[in-house]
Amino acid sequence: MTDYDKTVRYVHANDWDEDITPAGGSDWAVWNAPRPLHGEVCWPGQFRAGIFYAATRRTSPDFARHAELNRRDAAVRVEVIDNATVAALYDQATAADNGRYTLQDYIDGDLSPAEATRNYGLPWDDDDHSADHLFTRKDQG
Image 1: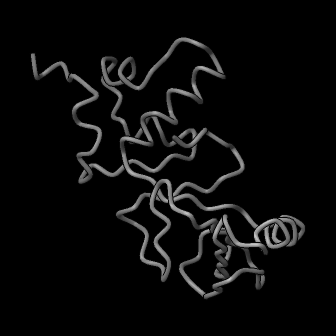
Image 2: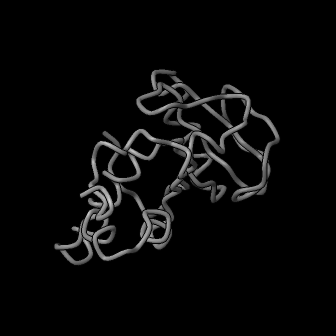
């Protein structure tokens, strides 16, 4: 399970169309920046924090060096996630902030998951049903 990190750019798997697909639990670390980066694989892609991407396997002997060089270049780490991961990260983030509200609490208050998660930079996709089993909506009885 990924821990919520304010410095990470979370991208929903349904919005990820880059050359490398670092699915949850993947061996790849991916960075993004407005300048060329260091990695085993580098490519230009969709603008998020910039158009330059780099990826290195976490098991690579170059991983620590690439991570440090990219950190110095102000790159953001990118994680590709689905709604089930968004829900878990959201609950972690809100527990750290106020200790009491979960995503279910907001859904019960008629706030959509997309609206609730947006404040934490977490991407919710209504077409992804990976988290449907986690919630009960008022109209479901």
